[in-house]
Image (cartoon, rainbow, N blue to C red; front, top):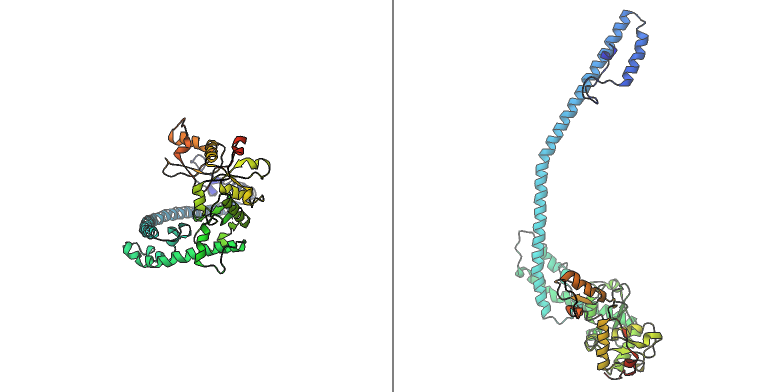
Length: 404
């Protein structure tokens, strides 16, 4: 009887019957224990009051439930109505972005071909030229590349940018070379005029213009010499203000070492780094301590040791004879412990520089080439990173010649 006076729910663990809150049952039980002792009128008044409260609660609950359901249905309808336009907007925007990227890449390709054709006849060293991706960021090229999608862009539209290209490239090249020459002056170089003039720019190509990278371990401590070496140096970026060149410092002591090497080899003091790389001589210094005096090394390695040892006189160095040099190069080729990144696969379309111990593994894993008689023939050696110095035998040491 009392349960009929309480609000209930038709939903429970079994989804059938009526469900009441325990608190309501306890409360009405306590009230009934008092009311039942009263008159019949009091009992009827109590029942009518509880029944009225229960009906009000049930009515409100049904309203809330209906309202909640109606709100949920309305929200789903609104979301459904918003979803399709929103989806269409997103799809349209994605298509626009994809189309924009394709258009920009096409315009950059057109500009890149024009820049490549210009550089084919330019007398500015490649090391000091603005790269295409940097030129794309300059105002003359950006004004064309950033045109709306609907505008047709051909090579003719880039003519104003191409007209401005010579000044852009030459100004950046002058700035770049002036910064490096100023570093040489600050480092103690005496063969650079001050103030710097364009006639000094060619001195950056000399073997005696030795720089060292202070932030990269990829050079194995070897000097960065010549425009091509600077061009391939990973820390060397264009265009850049002076602060970006902090990674390269001029080594005056090493420059004096290279002067001694040139004198020992009877070469002109103005020999370029590229010429030294092409000669590919092998030096050794009998006065170096420990086993270092038995090392046969390239001119770049010899310059490296100048940072730690005083070997600045021509008579401190000997140049190995062509016969001895050939024998040393065979030992260098067979040195599987050379850990310098100086081999790049000729078979792969895109290949990174790898170390000598990885050569056989690369051929075996990538190209299924096993038992190659000379695996290094399938690789391009790095022109600016020489083989690791090797120790030549006592017989070879005693036959070392002072002439090239």
